[in-house]
Structures are given as C-alpha cells and as structure tokens.
Amino acid sequence: MSRKQRIDLGESSREASTNKRSKCETPNNINPWTGAPYSARYLSILETRQTLPVYLFRDNLVEAVKNNQIVVVEGQTGSGKTTQIPQFILEAGFVTPGETSIACTQPRRVAATSIAQRVAEEMDVELGQEVGYTIRFEDVSDPVKTVLKYVTDGMLLREAMSDPLLKRYSCIVLDEAHERTLSTDVLMGLLMEVLPKRIPGSKYGELKVVIMSATLDAEKFQEYFHGAPLMKVPGRTHPVEVFYTSKPEANYVEAAVRTTMHIHECEGPGDILVFLTGEQEIEQACEEMREKAGAMGKDLPELVVYPLYSSLPPQQQRKIFERAPLPRVPGGPSGRKVVVSTNIAETSLTIDGIVYVVDPGFSKQKVYNPRIRVESLLVSPISRASARQRAGRAGRTRPGKCFRLYTEKSFHEDLQETTYPEILRSKMSNVVLTLKKLGIDDLVHLYVFLCGSRNLNDLFSQYLFDFFPVTSWTHLPRKL
Image (cartoon, rainbow, N blue to C red; front, side):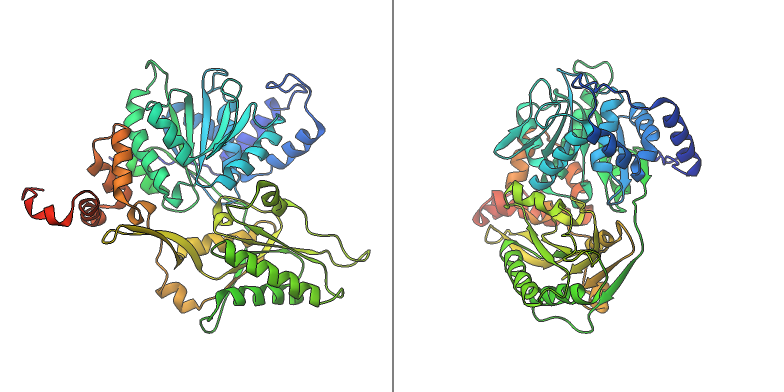
C-alpha cells in the first residue's frame, strides 16, 4: 500500500473554511506582537490577503502541519503561498517567542528582502523586529524578538554548519524548491538527517518542515520525504494567449526591444514584463526603450522603464512595484510600466498589473567543466517549464498575452522539459566538503534523489576529477 497522502482541497473544504473564519477570525483592534492598535493600512491589506487563493486553505494547511512533521505544498505562482503560509504557521502557535522562530528560505536576495518587507507590513510590525531577513553581508533581524525570518538558502546552510540541529527554529519553510538550487538541495539532504533527531519529546522539540514548489514536480519531493502529504493550492490565473515568431531571431535583445515598443503602440492598457539574461543586456534594453519612447512624442501614453537584477540597489528594486503613470491628459489612457528583469521575476517575485510578457527564451546558468575545473555563467536556453512559468505572469490580473521570441517548433523540440538541478552543473568538491562538515555521510542516497540514478555515474566521475589527480587513477582500488 502506498504511503503517499493527498489532501482534498475541494469546494466543500473552501466553504467550510470560509464559514469558520467568518465566525471566529474577526480581527481584534490590538496587535498581539506590538501591543498597539492596528493601523488603517493593516486592515486594508487584510482585505487583500483574504482574496488570495491560499487563504481559503488556511485551516487545512495548519491541520496538516500539526499532524505531520513534513508537508509538501504545490502552489501556483501568484497563489500567495510565500507570504501567507509562514504567517499561518506563526499564528497557529508553532513558535515560542524569544526561544524559537520560523525560517523561510529564498533562492535570491532580492526576493528575501522584498518579501520580508511585505510580510512586515501585513503583520503591522517594524521590519527587523518581529519580522526580519538575513542575506549575505546583511542581517536585519533581532535574535530575541524576531519570530519570522526570511533567509537565503545559502545563509541557512551556513548557519547549519555551526548549529547542525537548527535548534533556533521550530519550523523551516523551503520555498521555491522547484528551482533546485544547490543550497536548497543540500538543505533537503540535511533535513533528512536532522528530522529524526527533532521529533516530539526530543531535547530541542519537534522541527516542522514545509516544502513549497510552484511546478508539477512536487511529487518527487513527496517521495523523497517518505510519502509526506501533498497539498495543491491553485493560483489566481486568467487565460494567456501565446504568440511565436515565424523564424528564429538573430538578436534577441533587439527583438525584445522591438516587440515591447510594438506592444506599447498597438496593444491595450497593461504593464509589460521583459525577460533578459543579465545586467548589461537589461541596462542596454532599458536605455533603448527610453530613447524610442521619447521619440514617439506625446500622442502615446507615457512609458516608464524599470530594470530588475540582483546587484541593483534595494531602493531601485522597489520601484518595480510602483503604479503605472497617470494619463497625460484628464480622461486619456493611463501610462504603461515596463519591467526588464532576469529570471528572478519568473517565480520569486510577483508584480501586479503585468498583462504582457516578452520571453526571448534564454537565461544565464552556472556550468562547470570538470576537465579544466572551471565554473562559468553561460547564456543558455530555458526549459519548457520555465517558459510556462513566464507565460503565466501575464495572467495575474486579467487575460494576457505572451510573446515568445522563438518558433513553436523550437519550443517543442529544442527546449528540455525541466532545468537540470544546479548540483549537476556545479563543482562537486565544494558540495562534498559542505556535506561532510554538516555530518552527512550517506552521500550516495542523497545524490540518488538530488540527481537521479542515471546521473550518479557522471557525478561520481566528476567527484574523481575534483579530488584525485588524473595520474593517480590507475592506483585506485578496482572496487572503487
């Protein structure tokens, strides 16, 4: 008999959950975290929160976390899982203030900082007190007061080196697990070692784990964690019309700029999200769009262009959430906002108002060559799963359009189904030493999940290249 569980989140559970909250969840006027009355902004944000798809499943989720040590959540982009689920767990009493807290991991620094800021506003607290974040070279949290902390997966992994049992946390939420970053994969291997030592009645109390994924590979995580229950939360999506080019584009940056200006001239109101691969391309595209928008005159609505990439200062990153410009004349069409971003806007961040998406089909990926022992960032085609995620960004507020700057034949024949996990494209010596430092000795079992049994031989060959000189291979035991 299979140990897998699937929690039914049908319409009946939605109605029961909604009715239950309407009776007992009318917010009091006093904030339990600060002791001060709630602000008017909190009440307006609360109304918005209650419209999110994940809010309907709050009671089911809390019940699943209470009854299981590990829960896998498959929530589509835009469902609100990143901001809401950690708050649900916090409000359900899984944290002892001053002793334990909740950690929610993010693969990117931009996501960790912006989401922490948003959650602090939703809880009506000051960022750095009850809600904080920790990224490389920046820790905005309080060791005593903070009860919910957003961290990059690399920082939580570094913290685990000095605290292997993660004693400071009563619940860990691994978000964006579908991206399969190196640190997230290693964290999942670490948690498999830690969870048996953090069961109810143990010295440091029970550790709860929630794995959140935005794509359909959540069942793989479910299998790895011994049949943990799987919850499916639908996203708030509208139909998206997809367009392809008739022939391949010679220069995808120029094609992206040309397509964006065509949308601005010919399409109806709505903001535009353009995906490019790196800072240099993004700044070049932004400059060209601003020049062309200025040359169009004042007959067309105003066009503002914002870049988004990881090294951008935080105050400039926050501009992408600003509203589009007002009409040039009273009663005229509203202006349009264009966000030119790396793949960070694919799943990590949700920008309201996006109706049009321009997808050149490329992103930068880390690649390691074990023969010459060199890691490099290469512009590579995205996967079909990533292309679907990008197209879905156009359907958040109303029916949208996605313009793919490649042919339909290329989409079906040239793009792979999913992106290879980062661990398959990384230098293995660093990974092995990190795992040994964390006390994980069963590397083979870990690799079978992280990489698949088919890739185990390739991975082991890379391990040999990293740790043994080529001249010493003939002296290795035949059993090895």
